[in-house]
Image 1: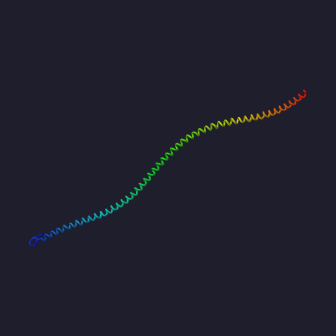
Image 2: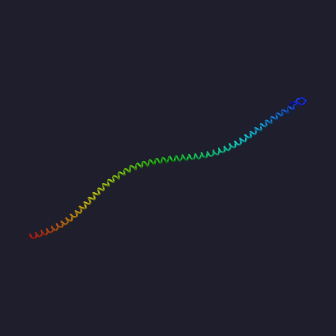
Image 3: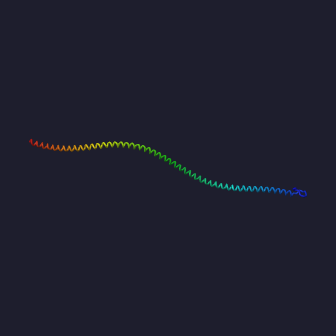
Length: 186
């Protein structure tokens, strides 16, 4: 029996030994529990180290990606500014084209009017040319008639010259005859 010695007296050392043994057993259990908990904590710490490394790696990757996105955003911003400039240039160019097309349409309308005028003038010139052809034929005919008349007049003039010469001869003969008569009458 614990706590009682051979003489039947209560043994304090024995009780203390039992208490110490219980306490030692509890400490062993507590140490095992602590050891288990420490092992679990070490495992958890190792897992956390791995998780932290993974997070660190992911954060570095995110920072790289963020830096790439910043560069990409700057590039997109630049491209958008360039597109806006180009769009503004195209708007100006389109306005210029619209203006030019309006001017071309005006010019085309003017040319249509001018072409109609030219067509009218050409028709008038053709009529005038036809009239001139007729007038030229008439003049040609008249010139031919004048040449015939001139030829006839030349012949008539020759005839008149011949007749005048004959008349002069006859007149000269008459003058001589008159003188003879005068002489005979004296």
